[in-house]
Length: 123
Image (cartoon, rainbow, N blue to C red; front, side, top):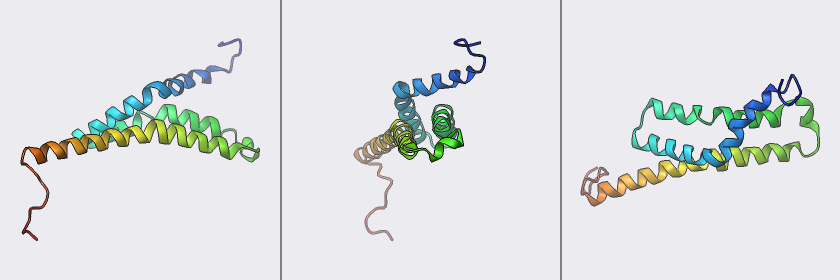
């Protein structure tokens, strides 16, 4: 029994969702860096698995039960969770980590004279 109720075990699922707010952007930035630095299957898989529980719990909280879908303001709640949890906390830091790492590697290669891009005079 948790908090005096026998069916409140699901509250435990909100702990990762609440911890995702302060720590999720850093973790997603690191996985973005990992994907850019070492392309392959495992970094991409962890980029999907890492946010699955916290983002999934928040989306399930907004979507379920289905009877709430018709109530006024439900769409606003859904879009807020989509923008904040999926966009701002999960996707944006991953894109920043990936993009900054790719840009840094490209600039280092260019300054070192190892530009892998097409050279002039080639088709």
